[in-house]
Amino acid sequence: MRYKSYSVKSFEKLPFVRKMDKEDIENIKVVSKIFPFKINEYIASLVDWNNYKDDPIFRLIFPHKDMLDSKDFEKLKNSNDEKLIYDIRMKLNPHPAGQMENIPEINGKRLEGSQHKYKETILFFPKQGQTCHAYCSFCFRWPQFIGINELKFASKEVEILIEYIKANPTITDVLFTGGDPLVMSTKLLKAYIKPLIEAKIPHLKNIRIGTKALSFWPYRFLTDEDANELLDLFKYIVDSGYHLAFMAHFNHYKELQTDEVKEAVKKILSTGAIIRTQSPLLRHINDSSKVWEIMWKEQVALNMIPYYMFVARDTGAKRYFELPLSKAWEIYKGAISNVSGLARTVRGPSMSAKPGKIAVVGVSEINNEKVFVLNMLQAKNPDLVDIPFFAKYDEKASWIDELKPAFSEKFIFE
Ligand SMILES: *Cc1c(COP(=O)(O)O)cnc(C)c1O
Ligand code: SF4
Image: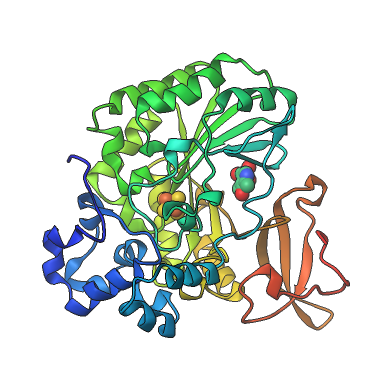
């Protein structure tokens, strides 16, 4: 298959559109004034078009009427006013959890396309990787796809990156992320990665690539013009003595079931890379234990390692996707209890909040008080990692800022 993406202006050319209601098509056009939308024929082939309305892949890709406040939706229906669109976007919290913070500096130079929040790992956002093969409707990076430029982390500054890593011996990991860095050509990707490897920084051990290409476009590893060259690049990284970790984004087991994805996974693993998987928990897409249980089992069967379950972030159409933390934990518990130890490598449900990654370990009763047991999996202050702490149980709370500490005045990170 040759890569061709369809936008809101062109998707009606695709054959499946004949199966859709007129109203749904119109609604997509209205809501995509706010959220980015893009599709290709491979992803479209994962949707069961005879029952598309509640199909998880349909919900993953297509903007939905309920993602907007009904009043805003009505206003947008008859208007393309830029101010209206801007105001609605701003109401949707496009700057969650300190995304504009943690920008590293070295010798007076700001490393704009990077983020250094946890001491071991620096995130690097290659400029040309700030897009994706398609857009997940829940994505917290949505502002950068619609060109709110101050949020567009971008950098050609691999030289400064190297200088920064050299000066910071706690850094063991570089995580290339986006968007999706694998929308870049291999040539471009090589221009970022090769100098980093050639710099032979002794404390740098792990190269990670955060990507959804396995779900959105497995041909990236199979038949794209530079697919083999890409696999060779992976092999070069591994052969140079680095751990190469694919942080693969999968939201539903339906993304794991095509011959293409299975073949692509094999090819990646054959380079010596490891594939770890992660996903947020999302209403309408994967809000049942069974979905996660099947997904983790299939991932293990394909030799991938389940890694993180995230709580949906406080941005965009959060109300549409969100689940209470109590429910998130129940779903996690229901799934993890039914898989073997090989899939219990996954941690979560975890909130990527300002102080760090906070997991809901469980619900417990202590001194007749019902509480959430929480734990920091990652923290800006590493001394706080792995010290269980407590919050008053609240059935409806869906984010850490809605919780109140139990047995103490403050949370440990405050
Ligand atoms: C999750 C995350 C990382 C990586 O954390 P690990 O637990 O090592 O996978 C790094 N930086 C940021 C900002 C993150 O959110
Ligand atoms: S693949 Fe990742 S970065 Fe791209 S739209 Fe989906 S969640 Fe966002």
